[in-house]
Amino acid sequence: MKLTLTSQRWDMVAPFVTAGETVNHIDVLHVMLEHEGLEGRAETMGVDYFGETVASLQAELAALDPLAIEQLDREAVHTLLPPGGSRNGLDCALWDLQAKRTAGGIAALTGIPMAPLQTLFTLSLDDPDAMARRAHEVPDLKRLKLKLNAQAPLDCLQAVREARPDAQLVIDANGSWTPELMMAVGDGLACFEVALLEQPLPRGQDALLENLRYPVPLCADESCQSSAELEAVADRYDAINIKLDKCGGLTDALAIREWCQRNKKLIMVGNMLGSSLAMAPALVAAQGADFVDLDGPMWQRTDIEPGLFIHRGEISAPASALWG
Image 1 (cartoon, rainbow, N blue to C red):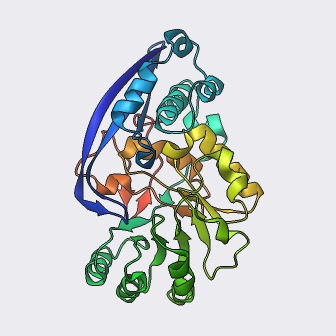
Image 2: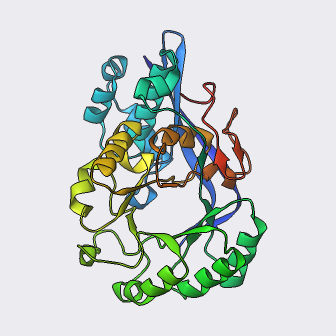
């Protein structure tokens, strides 16, 4: 087994603005495992709010014992690395390699049939008029995710709702709200038919959500990194946002998916931005999910070849030449 690491930069078609940052480009790490003439690939960018960078991921993976790489399997990956970008890259590359050895590919390997999925499309944080204009410009996209901060979130929401009365709306506050603001806007969110409120409060400051009956469903993103944190947030959130970079790959993503199904939690499968290679393994975990947020390639000027086929927000299953 040979491990190859390559950095890649993807430029955004427009600034991607959230409550915490403005992104004009992303740097990612491409991970490739070669064995017996086959190649398994993955793309990872890590968890930036935990300080992960392409350089840190590359150093972490390059430091692994070559003997451990030669004997690699999915169980070993979870022993070698904690949740995060490095484990994600290695885990998803290994899944791809194993899928290429399996008749029927990733669907046969996981037992999860692959069907097309409708993704949310993200509207960057902006003033209400600008967000409404952007929503109006994409009439074929029926599921929209609004990046909002603590400045007049209901004004932005109202503007988008009036521009797109037909759309499903999800809000992502990226932990920027206070408890007071969250409680003040709850009825307004319900009035504008918000389907889900993602991460209203900062990670570690959401204890007041315990057994709270909020007007719209609440989703944990930063507050739930991996399967190890599920029980800690079980009574605080109605939904879990599964991201491969957070939890460390498809293996743990499937464990979170199974836990959510067993515990009657809504499932969102999201992304940290990235190309079709980053989204492809997430599509496995997203099968049957309540909310699919895998629009990363739609935000890029260019994409990996071959990329995912996305039409009117519907993402087709990846070709085996891409992944799986």
